[in-house]
Length: 343
Image (cartoon, rainbow, N blue to C red; front, side, top):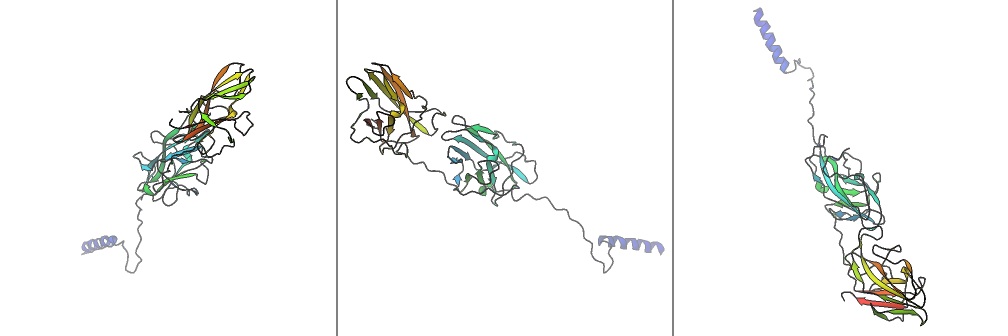
């Protein structure tokens, strides 16, 4: 009988163990449950930069600098298969580029580009960009552009369609100068029919405009200069600090003949205007291909000079008029030449 009671007690204790061996009326014991890892829901950076402008469509250029000399582009964010080395996160890529639209030298780096999730949180960039063609710190100018891929850490299950890419003028800036998103709009480029929006201050009242190629004589029968300009021709200008990147050259060859004495000629004696009398820009120091700043033409000799004026790339100007003033300080032309484009 003794052994039977021991076995019964052992069985009872075993059964009681399944219920934590608690006695009647005792409080139930609690058991700890380890949480299962879950994916992040938001990016882990700080808050989004302030921004007051409109949003640009992905892959469309946007000015990112106060004078609009520098422009950048950003692609739609896309997930990659590159390991992030951070639990719950993946690597997303944004393809970016930067170029000088007019003139200048600018430094651009990955920190200028910021990715923000739908909740307004910044997405961190990994300490080292593991993606091919990684965008690095670089300098862009008229002849040098920059492009590459910027890496961001995003939640593994992120829906990137509601993310936004911003451009900061400095990596530590709190306000962005441009933004790209899926709801952004691409800029529309209207055909320009003017070489600028600046009206000429030179008048030509009472002056008859002649065809290009017609000589004009300034002076008298003893001492004079004969000025003969050729028809304007369009010229592609190379990337250079001598002219903006967003213009096409208008080249005019001018022959100056000195009679009776040396002749003096200056670049600022010539001004090109369009149909609406807008002044066509040029470089006072000379664009690529320009050969006149100021010059002395020997007595009874002729010299030919090339003038380069500017018109916006893609513009369609309907007519050209070249004005000549006898003195660089004068605002009254004494000669003019005109032609309709396409002639």
